[in-house]
Length: 358
Image (cartoon, rainbow, N blue to C red; front, side, top):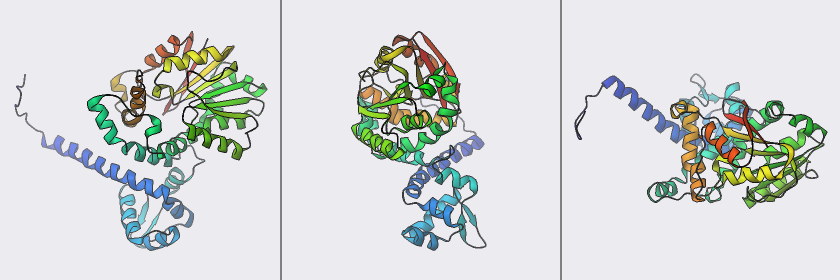
C-alpha cells in the first residue's frame, strides 16, 4: 500500500493522453459559450441561409463586428461546427451542421442546449457554496436562459417521439386521447409537451401546471399562438397540489427527478387519476449502476444534475433523485406514492419512458 505523499510513477503516454482530454474540454467549454452567441445573434442561420461566407460578409449580414466574427469562425471551424474552404477563405455549414444548429423543427436540433449550459454555468458560485454549506438553488433562481434553453432543447425530442411512440407504448391511452380524454401535464414549463398533445388529439382537454409563474405566462401565450387555447388551460400550482379533474392521463416530462417532494407529486397524481388512468413519466436516460453512466450521455446529465436538478431538490429539502437516478429509485418513489404498477414502456438514447397505473 502506498504511503501518504509517496510518488507513484507516471506513464508519459497516458499522461499526454489525459492532458489531451483536458485541453479538449477547455476548448469545448469555451466553444460552448461561443455557440450560445452564435445562436443568440443568428450567426449559424445566416451561414445556413446564404451559403459560404467570409468573416466580413457574415458580419455585414448579422450587423456584428467583423473582428469578433473572424475569431468566432476560426473557433467554430476548429471544433467542427462549421466548414472552411482555404482556397476561397469562406465558411459554410454542411447539411448536418445546418440541421443540428438551425432547424428548430428537427429532432436533431441541439441549439437549446447551449442556452442551458450558459445558464447553468452562471450558477457555479452558488453551487460551490452549496457544496461547502449544503442547501441548493431553485430553478426559478437560475439565469432566465435556463427556461428558454430547456424548452428549445427538449421540444424537438417531444415533437419527434411523444405522439409517434411514447403514447402508443402506454396501455390504452392513445385510444382514449383520440376519443376524448382529460390530461394533466405536471411541470409543464413553457407548455411544449402540453401543446404537442393538444394539437395531436383535438377531442381531448388539457391542463398544464408549473410552479414558475413566468413559465406559465409564456405557456398561455404559446397556446394562443398555436390555436389550442380553447382546449388547454395553464395554471400555477405545485406538483403535490394541482386541481382534481379525474384525469385519464397525468404526465411528468423530465421533471420528477428535480422535485422537492416527488413522492407527494406521485401521490397527488394517483389521487386525481380516473380509476383506469395512467401516468406517463419521462426521465433522462441513466444507468442502473454507477458505471453505466460513464459515457457522453451520463457525463452530460450528471453535470446538469449537479448544477441544477439535484440542487433544486436539495433547496427544497427533498430526496435529490437527480437526472441520473436509476430506474429502481424512480420505481420506489412512484410505488410509494400510491401506484401499484410501474414499467418502462419504451426508451430513446436520451430518455426513459415509464408508465404507472393504480
